[in-house]
Length: 202
Image (cartoon, rainbow, N blue to C red; front, top):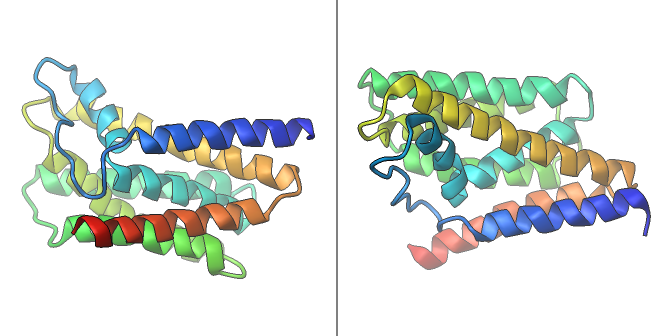
């Protein structure tokens, strides 16, 4: 086993451990706990919902699949910008109908884009993640509770960037290890497992 392969295996195991520690599907109870700092509560929200976590991980893998260095920062930046905009809309009281289903759809669509598209043009990738990030940001702030909005948003932005960075690191390691199929497999696993989870828990 090469050094890159060992790092890829370790990264995959860490990712799996993270995913199995999250709550199921679209259930988001317990994210806002009285006494938590605002930024900590915000950071926990993307990490404790499986739908949020998987969508952000798939978004990072999509950046890798696009195959350019620009995509590795433009795609995550697009997600963050549109996510913040969605949060601002929620804070302003602007409704976003069917936001939870938009989030669920984001996991499946982004996962399938990683898995099955023969190539992913940068504008397509940016457009997809931007559209779905709007739903994620709206949901984050809709569950703000009594926390101050700016530190809360800072927390979920940092968590989002961390999830993207982890996905990109795993994807890049897969490519360096000459295992590009791993990235496609990961996308397929994200989409199909979440779709199956939606069916069984609904």
